[in-house]
Amino acid sequence: MGGITRASRAIGGAGALAVALALAACGGSGGGDTSAGSYGFPQAAQDDKAEITVWVDADRSGAADAFKKANPDVPIKVVTYDGSANGSNSFRTKMQLFDRAGSGWPDVVFSSQNNDAAWASQKSGGKQAFAAVLGGGLVPKATLDGFTPGSLDPCTVEGKVYCLRNDLAQVVLWYNKDLLTKFGYAVPTTWEEYQALGEKVAREHPGYIVGTVGDAFAPEIYFWSSKCQANGVTGPTSVTVDTGTTECKRVAAMLDTLIKNGTTPNISVFTPEFVKKYSGKVLVMPGPAWYAGAIFNNPQSLNVPKGQLGVAAPPAWQGDAAVTGNVGGGTWFISSHSKNLKAAAKFAEFVTTADDYQVNLAPGYPAFTAASDKWVKKQESSGYYATDLQPIIKAGTEIWDGWGSGIFSQEAIWAKTMTPAVADGKSLVDLLPEWGTAIKNQAQVNGYTVK
Image (cartoon, rainbow, N blue to C red; front, side, top):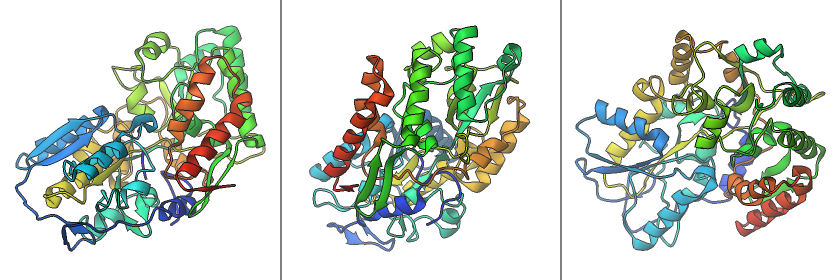
């Protein structure tokens, strides 16, 4: 999740200052037993012929295949894992095991999360930081400068870049133009209109839906877009958590209504159940830019026919300017322990910047500027979409900066605390205090002072 990561931010993430402060709290990379290298971190003895091991999630396997095809002379082993999806923290957990063993680290890792630089940039178990510093010459400055302004902010700790952003994940409003026209509905421009549409659909066309809340990134779609103060990183070790605000209550009340009437089910978009039950039944759906290829234009998912899928700007709350959340986006890390940094860097640069993957194969809006421009043109020239893609580009400038990327995972907290409770029929409005307490507890465990 698609992530991400990813100091002023123009697109592809939010809370530039908050993110920078949150990551700064975690410190920089530490020393190790290897010889000091020229890239700004200790490095192992290098072997340009050594095989590199790359960890990807299933959705990024195409990136590895594209690299192999373009670079047949580079020895590479590809391992598939969950990509730390839904805040599973598997990336960090596995690296800690390798730290204790003193060996086994992969050379390159993809993560779907936005907060991994917070821990990957510092020492663990007495070992040097897992993440290699990229801006010390390992990745050319021209390449780093080529990323969309702000997209590398969540990768940056105390001025040093530790990862490359795969794609941007601003939330927009996807809709089926044919169905809306058939039923005589207009595309909602406010959240109030969105709720009214959901209530009307429940009465007039039961079985059709206007969204889902079954994924761990649901708060990033809905609560972040409502300026809910659930994740306000305000200093190096400070976070403001207040889930009792009007901004939190209004979106919770809206979702309670739409969950109850069946138009916003508590089902993950990645399940066979969702595909079976709601193919051809999605009227509108707030979701990230990467829904384009991952959900809608995907034969293994909703497989919306050509010419039906439209995209609109994220709705605004009445009286407020429109803002949006950011759902992952994905990041690529190079291991500081790699014995073939040259090949590892070549891979990381390729999968984030090369047209062979980012333009021709990637489902989401690329973080690398040149690739994103070509991606938009390619998507529009395909004739697949019922509208132009300008709302996706514009939404990137509207990501609210009050939601930080601290070391703890909001997705993991939501999945553990809220998803099961919603499944049990509990009200989100009633659950807001419990959610706030869970966030505060997790933040404190990770060394934050909670306000």
